[in-house]
Every structure is written in structure tokens, then in C-alpha cells.
Image (cartoon, rainbow, N blue to C red; front, side, top):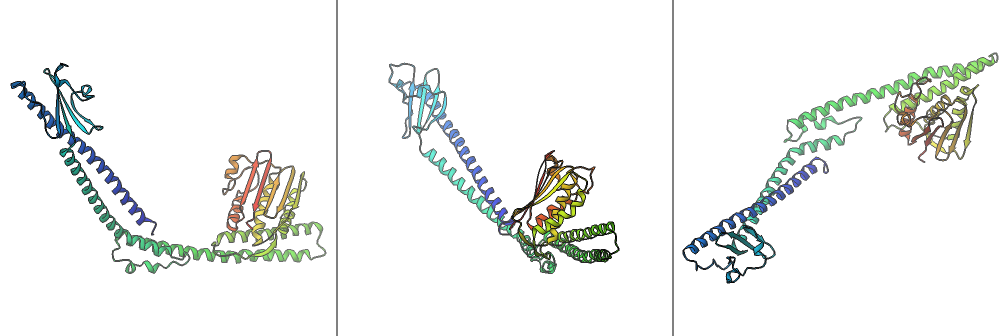
Length: 425
């Protein structure tokens, strides 16, 4: 779980530390500005009050003047020298102002006697406030970093048993999980109650999965034997009856249909058993000609077209050889051909065999966009009035996904349907 839960926890703590540091920094900056404004306003207001008090007793009292403060007095008389003011001061309203371009704080005190301007250059107070703010910021960020690191170490220690459990379970063989590896006496010492409960639940789940796999294996084995045996008896009996020279033409035709139905049933059973088995279990495969499968399935559906104005053709444009279970392709192509025959009342059904695909084109009723979106769903039927259980195309898609032969449908109402089986050669 190097990229799982521990990493996510680390990212959460890092993000939390960054956001907290940013918010604290902004708060300290704003607080520093407010403190600076309050201190300067109070100091300069007191300085102005003191000056006006002294001036009331002595009109010749000098203006306040220090190493970093300079004063100006505007009595409204341009002939007096006190009226000479720095540029822009007269436009200032009453109160404290900060002039960043000049790095000056200017306090304006307007009275009936005149207007007093106190100009204070950035100096010790601003430096002290700045140093205090920076010190507070660094201390807060250091505290956050330490607390976040300690919290992360604690959470990592709490999560480590879960990571250990996940690593053990990830190495299990689903068909035979090693449940003893997560027994109570094998868990880490620091495993809490939740981890032990999770381990017990996983052991129970693994046991049920193992039982399910065993039942699936028994079912596929028994079904393969029990279903094939009666089909073999039917096929052998039909062969013996066909060998009887006294059998009538009608009887031979019926026996031939029984033989074809038996072979088709064997193919369907084989396809179902393949889908029931695990993907890791490779089915019996062989090299075969695709055109042979196509012709077999076309011969199977031809009797269904008797008496109907439908022409069925096969166009070999370079049929390939495949190494796979031929019964799977029989089932897939057989379902597509059966659908084409069922939904085509007149016109054509063309089977085109290309080196990389098989296309079944018909001029049947076609399907709407809504029907195409659901046509591969189990038990969905485009036309409920017609025969069929709605499982054919669902099986075709599942078989195609299993063997890397994706199936695509293109259709429009009244224009027919094109069904394509792609081969990943």
C-alpha cells in the first residue's frame, strides 16, 4: 500500500499544514497591520492633544519635532510660513493615513484654530511590529509542522496493521487463499480491535469463496458429463437410424435435423461451460478454418428460410484460420444468423468473411437507437411478439469478451442490421 492509504494520509497532513500556515500567516499580517494602526493612531493623537494644549497657553509654542517626526500647521493664512505643506497633504481627510510611496504615516487633526499635520517616518515601531509578526509567524509554522509530523507518525502507526493485512490478502490465490496467514496469532502486535475484526471477516469470506469455487468446479464437471452423455446417445441413435436403408425420405430429413440440433446443443453446452469456468482455465482449443464454421451455421439456418423471399449468401473475402474452441464461434455466429433470419421477412442476408472479421448483413426490420443501447442486456427482446428469450446476444457478447472477439451492431429502423465479429489476430 505504498501508494494507498498511508500516502493519502501523508498528503492530507501536508495539505492541512500548508493551509493552516497560510491562514495563520494572513491572520498575523492583518493583526500586525491593525496593531500598528492602533498604536500609531493613539501615539499621534496624544502628540496632537499635547501640542494644542501647549499652544493654548503659549501661541508661540514650537511644533512637535523628533528624529523621525515632523509637523506642519495650516492656519488658513497663506502669508504665514507654517502654511507650507508637502504636496498632497491638504487633500488628506482627518485621521491617520499611510503613504507607501514615501514610507510615511501622516496624522491629520483639524480644529477651529487650524489643521495640524504630524508626519512620522517608518522607524522603530514599524520594525518592532514587523519583527514581532515574523517571529510569531515562524513560531506558529514550526508548531504546526511539529504537531502535523507527530500526528502523521501516530496515524501511520495506526494504519500499518491495515497495510500489512492488505499486503497479505493481495498475495492470496483466489482459488485457494492462505487464511492461516491472517490468523489471530499471526497479526501484528499493534493490531487493534478493528483490524482483528477485519481479519476474521476476511477469513470467513475467503472460506465462502473457496467453497463457491469448489461448487463451481463440481458443477461444470458434472454438467459436462451429465449433459453430454444423453446427447451422445441421441446422436448415435440418429446415425444408426440414418443407416437403415428402409428409412423414408421424410424420416431421414427429420433425423438429419435431430443430428444438427444435437450438434448445436453440444456447442451451446460447451459455450455455457466455458463461461462458467474461471478465465484462467483455458478451454480445449484447436486450429480451424473460419469459413467451415460459417458454412455450417448457414446450412443450419437455411431450412428456416424455406418459403420466404429471403436470399442468404456467403462471401469469402479471405477467411482466416483461428486457434480457439470452434464451438464458441459456432454459438456466436449461430445466434447472429438466427436473429437475422428471425427479423428479416424479405430481402437479403449476406455473410461476409474478411481476414479480421465476420459481418452478417440483413435487410430486416432494424432497431432504434434505444433498442441498440439495450440489445445486449439479458432477457431484453426487441420484438416481444417474436420467438426468443432475449439471451442470445448477451451470450454472444460474453463469449466475445472472453476470447477477444468483440461484437458490434449497427442498425436503423426499416434499414436492417449489420452485426460484426472482430478477430484480434
